[in-house]
Image (tube, rainbow, N blue to C red; front, side, top):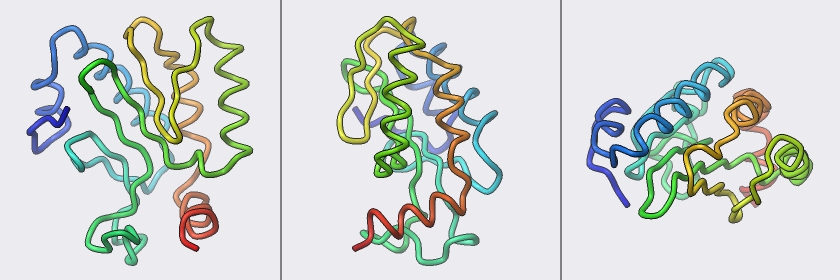
Length: 150
């Protein structure tokens, strides 16, 4: 579900009422824990966290005009989604899955790089904050160049 918005605040205003509080809280958690250098943007119809061109001029390999994506937050049709590119690192993915099972009793609903939360009350905010803080901009660029550009 794409939301037509130009800013993160506008995005949140245009999502269903029953998700606004959770998306605000997730956004706050991410912003408070994201290492310095990442920028918050609207991209792909979602709230995004990217490495700006001023830090990584090459941009995203699929479209170099776009900044390098790192995380996205979205209200989809049936869930709130958190897209996390850092899961290309299998050790980081294993850490997250292990911590998720320790910190919540809810079954992990996950795709390749997407975590789906069907109920806002089931979001493990502390863990998402830890996840957001795990990679610096330089760590992400290095992982991106190692795992995703081949």
